[in-house]
Image (cartoon, rainbow, N blue to C red; front, top):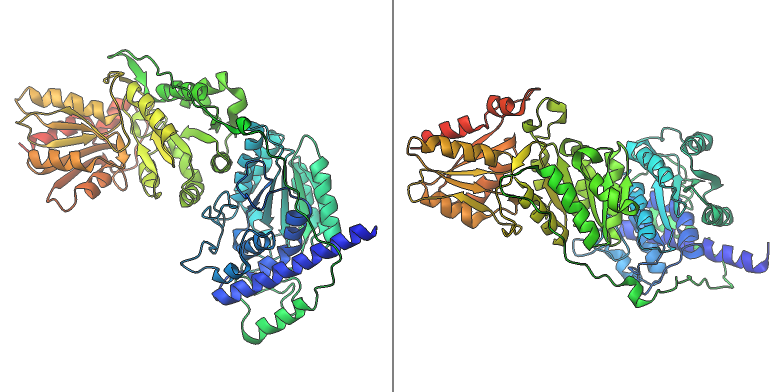
Length: 618
């Protein structure tokens, strides 16, 4: 070993020790946190940040920086300590860990410029890392993506969805490291320190695998170099470590997860670690990636070519969604589309046919599809992940975590509600509106025809933040002219007169049931106000309140969704405090297979039930 190499190794060891010290100090000051999980990962972090990665500490968001995702988010203090060591965070700021006025939260969030995605819900970081690695291809950058997992989270199914996806995409610019410290929160992990068990699994999935002593900095550097030279597949470094490494009385001991060191334990730990710092004869320089020419990063979107739909023609909103995806792909190179093996049903294959390089097939693995979308969005792409709305609920936790960072992802769920017909209740999304409305800041859109779908697709693309578009299986009549505008937060009043006895609020397929009901009750000289609430969140409060006050102080909502969390709840929230009664027609029991029209009628949301509810208000 050369003198220069020996000096480098010593410098990295000292950095690792300082990372341990700062992690213990920060968690002790906070009175909570996971210092032993930080200690096991410290050598890995030192080798990665100061021996392998290329990034500009003065510009953590530079698009060609190597990226790092801390999937084991509970080890956040060691991440913050690493960025402090790099000069990005003031060392004094580390003591503010977990305070309400600090961005150094208990688990990393994108409040910080060097955190791409929120982590801490285990099994998600590796999925996001796939999206970040895919983005490097999109922008033709040489940056590499690194992700650090814990061995405990290897029990998560999403990790193995990611294992398959990364190989399918041949992501040789992705390197994962598992901190195999042998312990989870409550006991030893499933495989403990059986490194062969981990190696066998990752090799079986097609990854290039290295098994190393996670406290041997030289071995870590060699494995990282080997990963950087690997072509055609992602790399996994399995690092055997000890939880609490460096502090003898907690090292490798169970029962210390999530417990800060206090009092004498704290003082003893600091003294022991400080004694481990040796003299240094070299200073490490972080390599900065070359900056590309400014014009290489400029983006100039073109005007979106709007699909041509004739009034009165029949178009399923899922078909219109596919058409507008392709148009957006032509207008904006940042648009990417992700699928979970239903592209010929969601019509996202319209995009794939024209832009295959920006279409990513996740197969039937919704968690990695959504996780990768979060990663892509964090690096400037505008991802549209699409699947059946009911299967998006499988990735609800990923969507929740995306909401924490207000990630710019455009979800689309098709085949919603009982209107899908014979496929039966397992395929009928009846909870999705409630799920998406519960995500802070998420825009929820529910178009009824081809024109409104296309216009709302454009609105979602232009909106900075998470959106959800709900589309339907049945073909529906085009009722809007191409000149109509559909701003987020708006609605359309389809029928109105001075004699209206009540206001009916519908969305999606129930708009057409309400139109049929209007014609039916009109035969008896009864009229009602009819509103298409295409924007369910934010909802058009002013129009709803005004219409209700003009029509007897009552609103009837009708939705192809279970009663909790959907359109009825959104309307009730909007008009509360105005003395307005809201009667909600919704699906109130588990449905069954059958023709669409019969299902709408059987479960209480057809034109017949709307008409009966209106007549009762006369």
